[in-house]
Length: 485
Image (cartoon, rainbow, N blue to C red; front, side):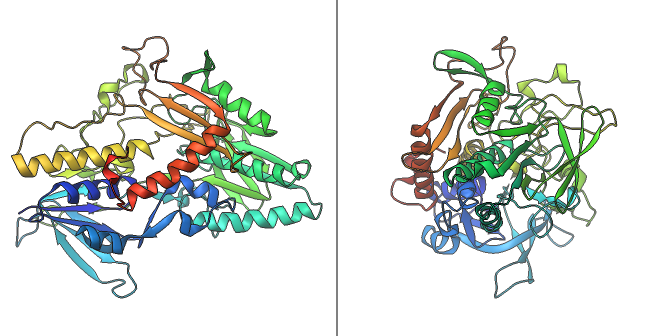
């Protein structure tokens, strides 16, 4: 009998747990450890943040589903990994701390044969002084943050209804923040809601980003086929902002946020400020804060994790200049090289390097996006991790068959630009591969046959449909496994 422990129940962890339980014999045990009682469909948080969906439309309780599936569910936070066991036993285990109301604060251990670290990121608001809920800006990174953002946004709407001008600044809140796409969706939806209320003459909206050029989105930008023409995502993004009367500040690394004032540095080394009445800035991401210890109790975190706290996997972490980066540097199985029974799919794995070209200001500050790994790629990584572990359990050690390198797979994205069945809009875009391969596609780094984009009402209908489709899949409704990741 084998025991598989999954840390985290986000897109990657929940997907892994679902396939493990479906395809493994009941004699094998599947345990999911996650600090939240809820599964949340994070891509729809932007609609919660503008009042178009309620919190309960983007989340559901995990306990009933996992009970039905036969998964041992622990509402707890993973604290440390002990991949060699301890002085009393060689069996590996994870130390956890319960977060449910009944057992909150109680410590426990969970042993394992295979471990899936799908903890996702720590929302590292602390990396930027004054950033985040409870401080000076809002967030849409979780359902509770998004609900708070909507409450705060409503205050600005009421002021505009009373004739007061409002300044909105939305974008990235750290020099190396990622998830530009989520912030981009949010600013377009904020502009849509303001325009729908005919208040746009009282709104000054600014996009603040660490991207070198708009449309970089942490993947170095792309060229897409649109309406029979080849267009850069730079033009794509700029046109969306212009159409919505949104100003922009690019190449900006936010250093500090005070009430009503954002302090940032640009690549020229200039220290500047922008004032706001409402601001939503995406924080930096870091590892979940897990530690690792060997059998003697020595801290071996640096061997298991990169300095940012994300887990090392089958990537090439050799330091090399930008010109020598390759798609071959990227992992394909998300297996830790030192402990082959540990995997880290989704945001939990440490990328070998950025996808966008590194940029440093004249003051030495790195200002560029880190790689996005949310949504579709995370789901695919969770699935192939589960399938590989299933094969290892059933067949024993062998070369892993299932692979999903970001340099070999594509991603589909729908960027919402406003919610409405007749007046909503969205941009649909596919990119292949996610990490550019200039050896295979020397002109643009990606296949123009599969890297395409269109905008319009149909895109909104598709995103709205996918919200319910992916929740159907996540809830384990009939034939969930036939739906794509």
